[in-house]
Image (cartoon, rainbow, N blue to C red; front, side, top):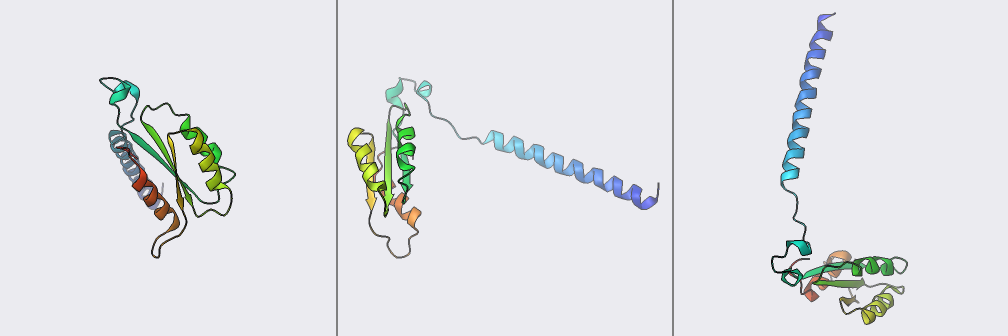
Length: 139
């Protein structure tokens, strides 16, 4: 085997081992930092001890999807759930759909954004307004 080929193969294996070790380290570190999942089983005194959870949804011109999205959110059985839906300056029926659903489920709160202040991005502003209405310990 020519010397340059032997040299190249030697360094190729070294590079493979290096990247394999980095991958293993990455997987180990990320597995150790997983986020906790709240469930009724975690409550020591029962479901009433779980913290209130505010699920926040912001949408603009989402007439075709907002009902399905909110229906899925409201099917959750977490005991302290509130859903806050921010209608971000929609030109379609998004706001009306949110209002109709909020009228039939007290866990759903509608927030309607009419104007976008200077210096704000649309989604950021809508989420900011929704968080201001939230009562949960977690968002």
